[in-house]
Image (cartoon, rainbow, N blue to C red; front, side, top):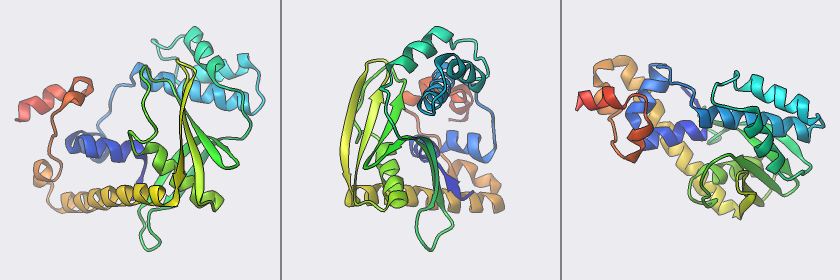
Length: 227
């Protein structure tokens, strides 16, 4: 395990045990409506930016979310129309080493990359700031690496509210995010290696971390039974 995304790192930081079940044991989790809707809307916006018409984009979005029963065409259309029509490169993939001497890598997709800035589309039902999680900072680091920049503006765009929150990232802020990602990735990789030799140490290596997030965890009942 040497390729990480923000979501993997964030899940490990939130609850090592859920991370263990999902990414070490490959236990499946149900595809929730927020996840399916996010995938659908991102696909539709990507295609619109690339020049597709709305009908083509919406059909592709429904396919992208595997026609999730809770995701409706009307909601996809509404959220997609809320995105500002901007130019740039859509869904730019990156896979970058977290240090020059390490095989640990960070990967992700930047929703819209422009000259000197980037956007991240959000279908969330609440608005939050660009520094409230490490995601935008990590994407700023990735964009700086790809574009050879020392400053870049990252913008969260909340489609439900047609509201944006942006921050001008410095090299120092981006470097702090990279260091955070490397620290967690290195810790995970070491624990996975140890687990390969001593699988009976799973509870010590990946302990549950109870909190408000347990309300949305598909393994909550199982986890409760362990304590």
